[in-house]
Amino acid sequence: MDITIKEIKKDKQITKFCFYGFLKNLKFFEPFLIIFLMSIDLNLFKIGILYSIREIFIYVFEIPSGIFADNYGKKTELKICFILYIVSFILFFVGQSFLVLAVAMAFFGLGEAFRSGTHKAMIYTYLEQKDWFNYKSFVYGRTRSFSLIGSSISAFLSILFVLQLNNLRGLFILCVIPYILDFILISTYPDNLNERFETKFSFNKFFYNSFKQLKKVSYDKNIIKIITSSSLFEAIFRSIKDYIQPILQTIILTSSITLFSTVNTDDTLKISLAVIYGMIYILSSTASRNVYKLNKYKASSSIMNIYFDILALVFILISFSMKVNAVYIVIVLYLILFLLKDSRRPLFVDVIGDFMDKKERATVLSIENQFRSLFLAVFAPIFGFIADTFSISTLFLILGVLSLIFNRFVRVPQFAKTNKEETL
Image (cartoon, rainbow, N blue to C red; front, side, top):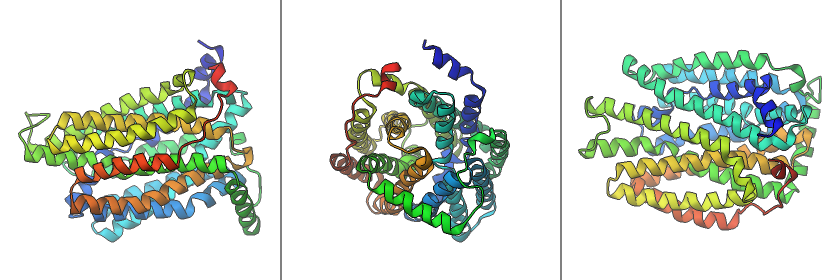
């Protein structure tokens, strides 16, 4: 094993980076979010509207938050984001109306906007300080694997919580605990990772820097192509990733198939969903941790393009499997979707990392997230409408065809392998 990789694995700050993601992903409500929203008489179109509200807030505040982090401190911004998340969880816990849930989604979107890109930029900074920048694909894959382990443990723990609480709302308030712990963890990061380029906030400088950095990024065609491919892929996936919940609900309620025959139908659904999410995240963690090894055979940019076509084919197979109530095949195909998404992200970080200036990292990563939010804000209600009007299986067939077409226009440029890839 490379001596540097051994050092990275033992490094205390890298370990903190890993546990940041672990705590962040303890979202106990995740396997049941759509089921919860449907239980209060919201159809998939209205749920899509809620998702759009979240993404609109991300879209509006994404770039300003990235520029703020680059100029006035990343630690400060991350601590703000966890406060916003906690407010969102409390609103979900108490909310009874669509309006309150919309406000909760807005706060969640603000938290996402303040978080996204900022932590990755801190990782880049630390790797530069340690002269480990060529190992960014390995490091990000490792930290992301801890995040996915957190998601897996969260899913399994949610089984105990949901059966004891008999109320899905309680899962939101339980999420406050790990998010307080993450707030404390961020506070222990060294101050040199705050990396402020301004010490005093000025609205005039803020808007001037915003315009200057956005203008510079917009002229870089390579960066635009990379972030468009990544954001479109992520937006399509995130729009439908939780459709496994109504899919499994429909299959269990309309057939004799049960995954846990010793409990009632409602608990069977909850346990099945939690177990499926848990297994998905365990395998996704392994994929994220090891995807850098594919660079021995192909450049990250090439693998990103291949993944997009595989995504399209999996959508089409899910559509046909749903039509014949092939529950186990649907679950396996959904697992493949998550593996694609969670192992593609380190590839994106690897590719984009070679094209960003030091002072613009949070900004560029925020632009990618903003693109994703714009796509998702449009896709979520449209996909919900198609699913309500026709069927979820029809939606997946349409998505498969469209994804094949999209990838013809947003293919990541093929770059030569970097020295980093040769090192690994």
